[in-house]
Length: 261
Image (cartoon, rainbow, N blue to C red; front, side, top):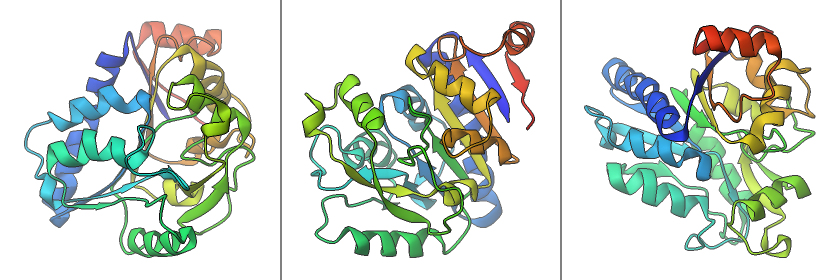
C-alpha cells in the first residue's frame, strides 16, 4: 500500500487524476478498451473534476461501473450516486458504456444479477474508491464479508454509515436515509488490477489510521486494501493526522510512504 499526502483536496484530486489518467490510457493502448470502477460522494468531487480534464483519454472506449447505490432512491434525487456520476463523470466525458446501478428498479435482485454478469465478463483495469467514516469501502459496512464471491450484493446500511450521509448534507435527517443498498462486494473490488482511494477530511482520520495501521479485520473493511498488490491511498493533512508518529515523521520527509502488511 502506498500512502500519499497533500495539503488540500484540490491538489490531492489533481494528483489522483495524474495517476489515473495514464492507467486508463495504458489499458486503452494495450487492449482497445479500459474498464473502470468509479466512486461517488463529496470526497471524490475534486478528483472527478480533474480526471474529466485529463488529455488524450478516448472516453467512448471506456467501460464503467459504479460501486454502490441506495435501494429505493430515485435517480433524480440529489443524493443519488447515479445522478452524481452522470453529471460529474459520464456526461462530461461522453462515456457511452456505463453500467449504472438502478437503485429504484422494482426488483433489486435482478439488478444485482445483471450487473454481476456484466462486471465478471472481463477484468477491471482500475477502481476508484473512497473510505467511509466507519471504514467502509463501497457500502460494505462493518463487519464486512471478505469471503463472498458475488460481484454485487444487497446490503443493510448501519447507522454510522447513514449518519455520515446526513452529516454530508445529502439528507435532512436519519429517517430519510435508505436502509438498504446495492454494493460491489469486497472481493470484487480487490479483483481490479489497480486501486486508488481518495480519502480527505478530519472526519476520516480514525478510519484511515485503523485501515493503515490496525488489524486487518472485517470490522475495519478498508483494512483489506493492504492485501492488494497495487493500491494507493490519497490523503490530505487532516485525514492523515492520526497516523502514528513513525508514519507522520516518514511523511514529513517524503510525501509518499509504502506501508506493508
